[in-house]
Image (cartoon, rainbow, N blue to C red):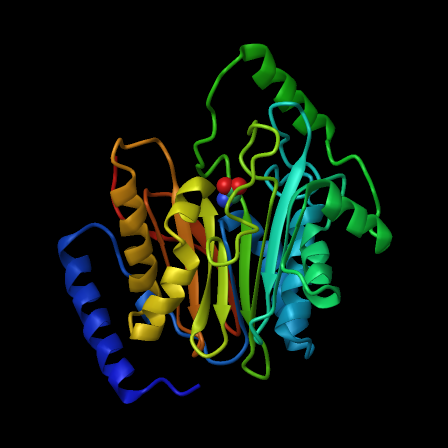
Length: 327
Ligand code: GLY
């Protein structure tokens, strides 16, 4: 889609306002100026560089954005050192690993799965729901039954490290340890634009460590942790999912981009909503990454230390996100 002249005028005005703001506040608005023409992939958190690179390689080889983001997210799901996604993800309070994921393509098709046990590649399971059923979301036992009927492998997803971490947590009887920080990343969210200019996105997570068994976060909720509209752009979320769900973050961001706000300004608006909801100043973190149809990306988080990865023709790097406030 062509962005209308009116939208561009609006974008320039907003970007200009952003630059002025960044001179008077410590937060910098990088997103407004990061523009990539052609193939691009962006993801949440700096520990997902291998995923953005895999995605970008596949885009370069001519794969469409759906195939590329699925393969990129599978890299994170396979990584036992990533303790918030797939194999090696920290379990819930009962010591059970339960995974959530969602996926969207450029035609507005969507699929998701929630509270899935013993299936590593939940991003692929979400894709199967999207492509082989008339439904959008399957959960729990039903999602697992569907996985097994579709030749997904059943396996133990606990590693020595994740079991030991759970045992330590249980031993200490600490009630709440779910603050998302640079050392406790959560959720890979990934967006990509392919050779045909088509965007897809996906999200995969084991959710908050030590959550109540049965808790589902934002990651499988279309419009909360993921939204793609190929005419406008897409957004992905990470952080304390309850806050993302309560503010419908990613749908809001895409709609704000449709109105002409830059990706970073749109993310910032969604973060403002979270900040407003967080009246009691709970110790949470939320981060958004948005990618506009024309390859401009932006990110914003509630507090410092959120990061994102960007792979395009200039390389594959991680960056610190702009943030809304310090404590
Ligand atoms: N953002 C992931 C979760 O809250 O489960």
